[in-house]
Image (cartoon, rainbow, N blue to C red; front, side, top):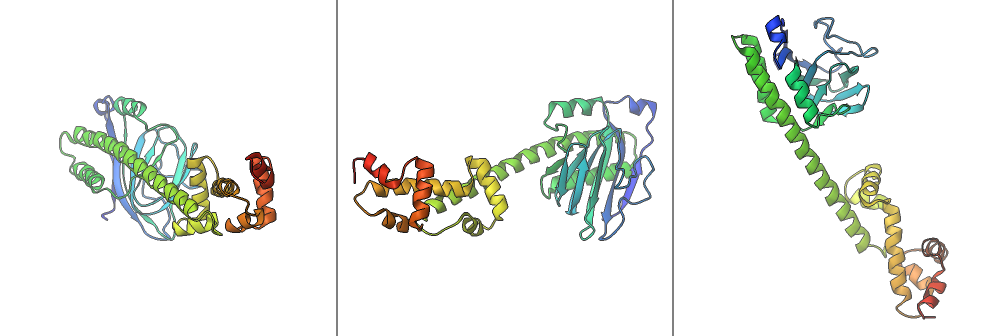
Length: 292
């Protein structure tokens, strides 16, 4: 990556436009390097303790490495393929992890046009990070911004402004697409988990083992499953076993102990859970069905 940055003088005419480009650049931050580089103007430089407040928008694209972002409204991990949208007037700070560094490209801008666009689109306050992954089109658009800004040919401001509008629209579209894909992955994972629970309801299986089968951490699996199904995976499994127990209790005069064994449970635990969930013992439930 060719490290460079430019801060443009803003004249009276440029300041009256609907969108004015203020600065742009790209930097490779090596592992264990200080951040941000000290060569930036004082009004854009910052330290981690105090953070920074800008009177402009900035789009920052992290194409390699990772780090941390914090603002007055959020705290999130930055991964490769993350776009950061800085809002004017909001204190923030961000930095790469020392063991990874990162590659960043950015552009700063302001104006009434972009104020209107960001109000009308879901770039809501508090939403600063967009995890869209590596996108070659976005990389090329930043390359175009850098090329036009270096040349500074007549009319470069309107050209770069048009690229920024395109960037904002593309980031919005890619972010929505990423959310849809994430939702599809969650649905698929939960459906697989439910199928596994149903297939192995009579086996000695635990939610932790299902998470391992699905190759996700148990904490993430439990949180996602509960959000999607409205109950923890352990409670879902208990519900399936209670339903299976009701079916078995209605099939004949099998001993409660035998039914508990078929469900891979000891009789005492089975009876206790059954009464908690159904409001009566297995024997009482069977009698209510007209059986023994």
